[in-house]
Picture 1 (cartoon, rainbow, N blue to C red):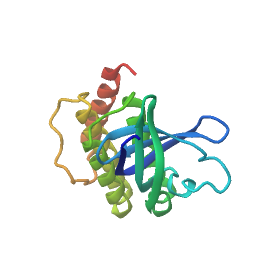
Picture 2: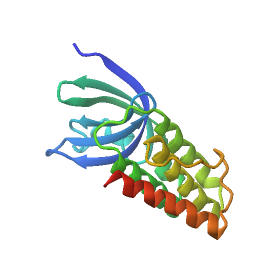
Picture 3: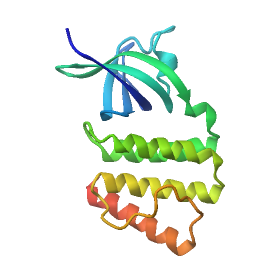
Length: 183
């Protein structure tokens, strides 16, 4: 019998596999970025379907098999999709897309979970200009964790609106980090 691992996770993406299976990309508190197979997830009335929607925070049970991770349970804790406005979901989606683009395979770095969770938590209370700053800062911090940016990072948690020159310089650093990845 295989060992089961329970951890908190954010659902970043779901990809259909077979008729009823799906590949769920999770950003976990303990294991970093994980792609897990969920059997029967796409069937009508599937038990796990309500807890594994995009931007859901849930408690998941994972089993490590010889062909990768398999999802055996999920309990919904919070749905960021319902809490965020459309514009905020688009920002959250862009940052999640950056994570998915930059991390191939698995990234065993739990700090990515902390960065993305902090971003989701502060997003609703910010003005549009501060949300833009938060998106840029989070992207820059993710690139730094992945070793694609070596510059000095602005103070964590400071999401003040950026001056045009500051914004331009930070966006250039993000673009350089993405270019350095070769992706």
